[in-house]
Image 1 (spheres, rainbow, N blue to C red):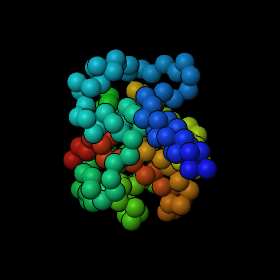
Image 2 (image 1 turned 90 degrees about the horizontal axis):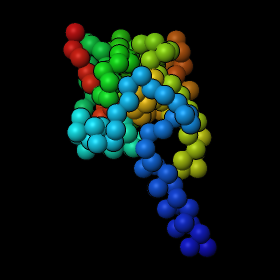
Image 3 (image 1 turned 120 degrees about the vertical axis):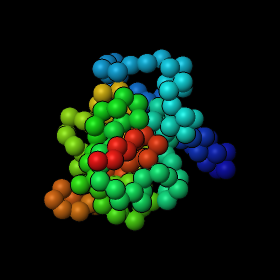
Length: 156
């Protein structure tokens, strides 16, 4: 039994470190080699944005950011979220109730760790941003729980 549990945990761990590939054969407007991504991004940004990692809650750049501005994709600069839709979720990650445009992000089903979630990616380059949950505030009822490492804040 312990061996089976260890195997399941190992498979989950390996699946979480896979490259950010959304739909099979999906072509993004911005594509780069892994070497190019590694040159552009810090190791933490690469782990989160390109390997679908998650940063530590409450220990990231934007969870407590209250300045006015916009949040762009760290990979390609695409405009993703506005500070006007950011709210305090208490989760330790920056949270928004809607993206700047429905075309800015794409979602796919994520079943890692025995959970079913909706994973959010940049529609332009495929960078992993975080997850969206249905426990957010009005008017959408959504909580886009994003990783600061996948975002670049531009102050107004």
